[in-house]
Length: 113
Length: 111
Image 1: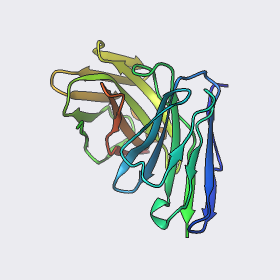
Image 2: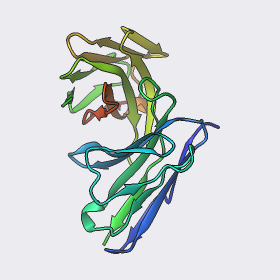
Image 3: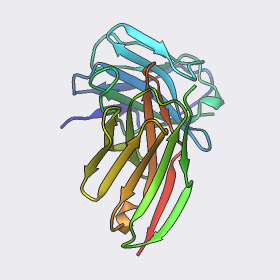
Image 4: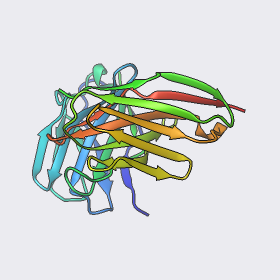
């Protein structure tokens, strides 16, 4: 089954404790992206990747890092999480950098205390 | 910078009605426009993708149109059902490969 898989789906952590949210897709998509969704602010792009070893900042990259060492994986790293990073995070991927249909993961709800 | 607006923010209709959701965008230089459905606390499910060269796409009871020159898209839902209740988002992919999302329209279909 074609899918985008995120883990963990739910996480409660404390300020400053490094964490990684993994994202994996099995569709051989070149393009992958991370978004956060907050009430009243909608979906905002954090980082995206056009292909292996190619990453770019989105609208709200501060406090996040990403890597794209393999085509299928695009982890989101919070080196020192803060409470303002409490949010619902989505990973997405598409085939083709500009015209492909975007597929989303189920989301990861992160709470930083 | 591309801005995407969805009107109305919320809509409540009785079951069986046909309805139209609106999406407008400020920069017509887009590659495609995609409509999504999101259930509470869940991920986004792709409904329809319209490439910039296309005028409309259909899937079952859903029909999406695109008028690039006027910066508008509509999602038409025929014979609405309670199971259609969800938030509907439109997203525009522009020339910089940025994907801009609207805030969504929260639809409630009452039995």
